[in-house]
Image (cartoon, rainbow, N blue to C red; front, side, top):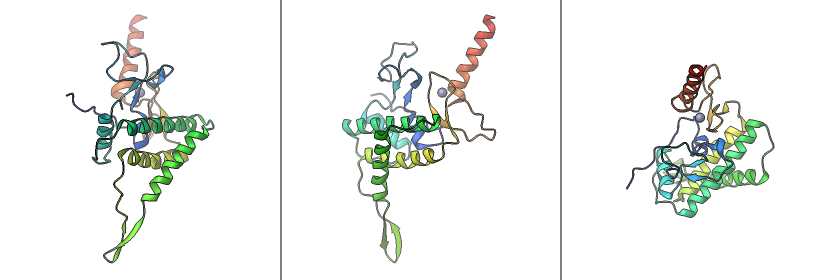
Length: 204
Ligand SMILES: [Zn+2]
């Protein structure tokens, strides 16, 4: 059995970490394909689905600090993927100042309402205490936590950026002092761009 995938959390946000479980979104004209199913050694021609199995979703949730629960079902995986795509479209709408699709907004608001229902308070041994969480399905937990984070980003998208690599398409938060961060990751897209510039300068 292969090891669990290692996910990217260097975006500054749980919602963006989920959105960025799709790679090469800039090529998203084509259908999603699963990680590892591309032409060997070649550059993928389509977006890459890193959340490609219930096991990968469980690994993502664990790495996100959302705990370890029972392995999610294939239906839960599809629900999280669909929710993730709605959040992605909403964040792009915020970034591009375009009106969102009402269905996406309704989906986010449902997840927010679901999350709030759990954030209750009880009187316990002479003090207020948070209501112990109901044993939640992993998909519900992911959705409610990501929805809360996405809500904050939609209300203040000032630090929201899309990677300058047109094929990457990852979103991240620019917390740099100069607010000039251009790449999701200097190690990945930043260095690829540098290498491209270098090759272009050598060709001249
Ligand atoms: Zn990038």
